[in-house]
Length: 347
Image (tube, rainbow, N blue to C red; front, side, top):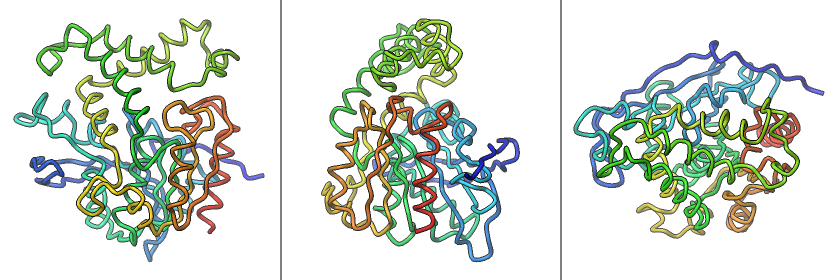
């Protein structure tokens, strides 16, 4: 059996790409757009070992670097792995770090389409990478992986879509509306902007999110006890209330907008025709939804599969719901994901 050693995040190399003035899908110009990244491993001579790993909702590169492991699927001794921070996460350009006039309610709406175009330009400019061995992503990272394959069919060989989809589904939209409304219900949210820290909003958002991100079975079996929580209330406070309060509230809303508008066909190339966008993908596609995920559901991927040229569906058998795709504390889920990703990379 292969053993895996987690990589110390401090061993990675952080950098920043200045994209300059970027004209977005909306027609707005995002001035001085900046993409922050972190890399692990070494790019080989023919640049064939590059893997892009985009961040998920509210995550920054060190939050997801645990999947980069010597001996694991994302192995820095074999691959050059670039974690790209999605706009709105507080590191790359976000409402919290973007100066006037593009701050607060004036912050430009950024789509996944916009994000992956800047990512591609960064790869070409900084490292001369024109083709990726794989794009690996979980949740919103998976949506970005799907966008890469649809928008640049010849630039990516494989994508691993972990608990994600090609389009934000209607029920997923409803979930986002709920947590978004909880945050905006805070009294500090006035006239489209926050006037202070939305303490009540963070608490409400975290508690609603907790009911969606993990399955009913997770709570029935009290698996939160294995995470060091002394009670269910302790788990909600220490994990979920604390989680989102680390972030800027305007950043959270900006990424919600990006998430809700995630759609690989929502562009001039495909004109909203999702089956045509899926059929245009040349990459090998590994679909790994969580079989207990409440908002990125297996059926979303099952409906996409017939339109893909080279697709495989392998649901993660886990009561951890959406969190199955980010297996910080679940060795069985990690082993399942890494086994299928290794097979994808070997294909």
